[in-house]
Image 1 (cartoon, rainbow, N blue to C red):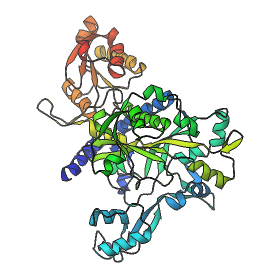
Image 2: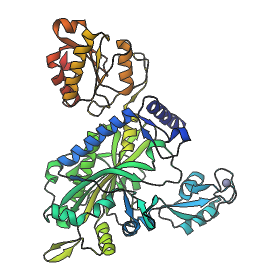
Image 3: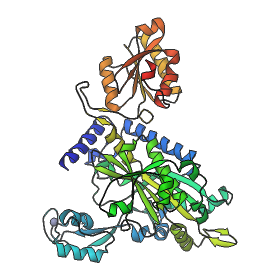
Image 4: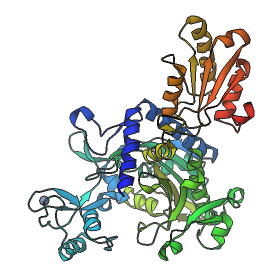
Length: 505
Ligand SMILES: [Zn+2]
């Protein structure tokens, strides 16, 4: 545990020093836990991840929408968040400090069953187990429920809340979607946007934020289509690393790599369309640059599932900072949400099947972007070694914040001008490049290694003679000379295609 704690400090320290993220924000006013600023490289990296997410969804036939982040209280009453989106809290009777009751119990009496317990039951557990204030060891007060939504006001007197998830705002558009999709189900949509959770005392830095960017996709679908999903054919032979609840209930954590069609036959998945969603979520994380050996899919135990959830699997990423980190949820939500909003809004949120009204089901993929962002920095970290005198980052080329750096050997105009021309051509090809003239070439290579830039291009006096430039590979530190006419195609292949650096030699 100690070494893990230290490793997350290394990653956070590196991220702050090199401009990935800073915080807690606002730093010059002492900082509020759960808020971070993205620095220039963090913002570039987040844009890369968002692009990978967007492209994956659009290819899978989803349409993007954007809704307000503030909604009146009535919406959250209907969604269940006003009554149900709560943490149990307890206050020290002496020093007044407030704690999450479940966290305190877990810390002081590990192994106690607390999932699904009411506030009264938690109060009882605290008394029985002798749980005390973590700071002054005094007795604690009765457990109360604390709503995690951030409250605000519209105009003078209308209560409203910042959204704790994007999904609810998407459901509210159901009737508009019906028109847009010409009354044909399934309808696939997604949203990428800010969400807010007023965590009591957020810890683990970037992993638990009060303001974060969420991606959520929904498929509105009828029951028959869930069992007979045409795109299932395309993915049924793909393998997924599964940790089903049956395995977990035996107290094991062994992954089983299984064909999706077999997983369905064995009952790990109940529905073709849901299994397809799990695969889509998995492929989005692969497209964000995560390697197979750092990923697993873990099914929720009965005790973890939300009461309306028919099935739930998480994508977890292995980090050296925190072990396995839950990064994405794939939920079979049934028709819970639309039924609730139909009841509360008095609007018809159903379709007609054989002249009967039917409220469609919802399959959902939900994740925050900051978690994978942190995990990717963690997974990319390479310590300094005999060959390199600095820690470096091994980002996959397609998501690296800077993909190519362009250097004139020296700042003189005869080198600077052709280098600037090459820089422009590289940017025009859709590659994020940086132009750098400061310091020796060795120092510039090192600076790019530190931020994970996979390729560097140097323009020198030989370039003026024969038109060739040097391309340097971050991972092997090897160099090749290429003619500048062939450079952009080669870089496109290296960054986005399957071209290996070896093959350029
Ligand atoms: Zn106290």
